[in-house]
Amino acid sequence: MTRPCKCGECAFFKNEDANGYGHCIITLNQYRCDDLCKFKEDHMSAVETLRALHHYQKWRRGGNGRPPHPFVVGQTIDNAIRALRRITKDTPKF
Image (cartoon, rainbow, N blue to C red; front, side, top):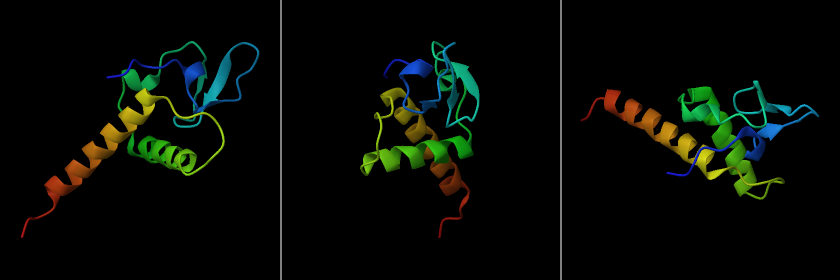
């Protein structure tokens, strides 16, 4: 597993001010650039997972900007797989 990133290293950290505070476009919260990624401790919600996958896919298909940090991409994929497994577990098998 890759090491957790700091907010300032993440491609999803935008609008950093002179004091080091910026806006995470996944969580829609304000963090400091030297904070560790929130997803080290907490799982992403379904909305955060979709938001991160959407931005990652836009970047992968030729979007501008830095590539997302591998830690965030890994957490996003893990959460998407968890959600899909939950859905398939609840569906009846014929």
